[in-house]
Image (tube, rainbow, N blue to C red; front, side):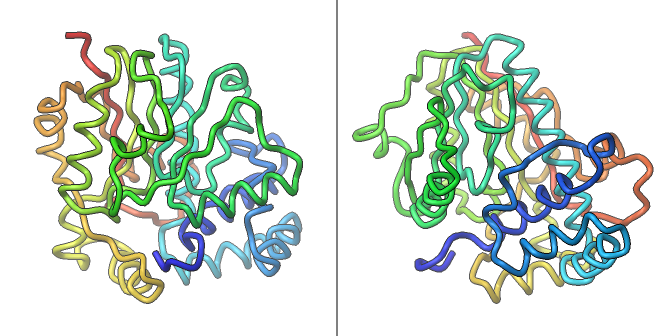
Length: 291
């Protein structure tokens, strides 16, 4: 990430959520009325005009040409994580921790989080921009706390020195769209920190298949995406091999519950969608053991 700006990929995800929210009420996967506020003027205008069917088709086609496979996969992923989070809340978690929050607005838009403390941690540039936007909207929620951290330069343990987090509470942890930008040692440090949370905690995190970094030609849309990310200085640096993930999590006392590819969660939430999407992105869901 460039030091002088918020993440561009965070804005793309906000665009996808804003476009979904512009669809007719009964046809949306979810509703995020705040996402549009994080977009630049051109993207805001495109989102507003997308309520007209032929313009919506045009906007979708442009996105598909620029980022092949991203839109449908990003929308399905958002809904899937929402549902996993609801499951965790219904099973006893008492707080939510969002690592690398970007322009995530779950603390605002999900009614079942209204009375649950939400702690967001993100890069200072993205976090500051997000807080300024929400202040401008008059929508800084009372239950959400915003902490700033550069995961490649600082550790979560460092953060505890000035920003307390209650590790004794069963916690739902969301780590979306981040692991692929970090180093193996940074990821290991995060999981070592997360292993300190109370038993009965849950983690929902995304990752990319390791093969996409070694052989991007094997996955639809990957070559163009990785090239574009290099240009905006948001290069991917890490991926897991899915067959090795369970043992990796076991080492930190987390039990893997689900590990679905973008193909699977896109099929689950958008079964009628014929647009080809990402194949290399995955969502994992694990529970902290109580012993």
